[in-house]
Length: 337
Ligand code: GLU
Ligand code: ZN
Image (cartoon, rainbow, N blue to C red; front, side, top):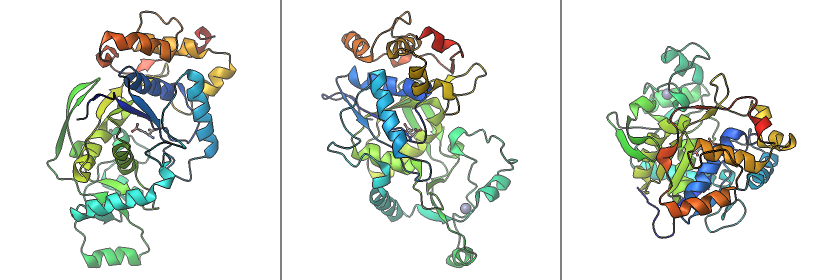
């Protein structure tokens, strides 16, 4: 694993510009920023606009505006810096060549299964949770060993394949999470062979994020606990592509009073809505700092002021974060005015 090194942590914000930033995004970007800044390190902003159907320039502009409002800055990207491009939509050639390298290991194969077929195979009724978080239903390996004729037959039916990575059946990835401690997770439990490219040609998150974090020299990845099962898949890709993995901090999620993870549909908790209601960014940061165990109360503060204090107290205290989801009551914004 990479460590801080003499130049400090290289952290990143990697938003998907498919909507306004909400409080949950802000919480993880706050911690990503703190992890980097308290080590004297750098922050990169990369727009993960990999899905052209869902991404918009106006969301990217709004994300930059809202990060700045909260007091979170960055040193590189999205329009200049030594590791560009900082938009995934401009990196398709890089993802192509990464897949060529994986092909050399004989580990890439076309998969002709439709989502519906996979759901049926997994025995999951439509819309049911598969219990794998973001991993999706476990892939049973149907297309792993199709013959050339079988492939030609599928193509003749007009099916367009996705591309999957053949994951060794017994692969277990071990890593030390900064928050959760030692993790030992089998690729099988993450869903087995995973997609590198969708059947519509869109590159998969797993591949894009590894290619970009690698080429940008990212040494610390801070993200929600809901992505934990992506990490073993990404570690395998790092190994196959010859990269050094970053350190990972999987942080507890903010959720509503019903225990639902905060997401874009909680429109009243978007940073833009909070700003419009008259909330102060320092009050929000003060609340984050209390939740993270960085200060006793939610006294308003700024990321910069906090970082200046904490950086003299030793390494960033990841283990002070609470475990499990953190409920944000609907009335919380009243306190932030
Ligand atoms: N674009 C991804 C997201 O917003 C990034 C996840 C990650 O930090 O790796 O969920
Ligand atoms: Zn298949």
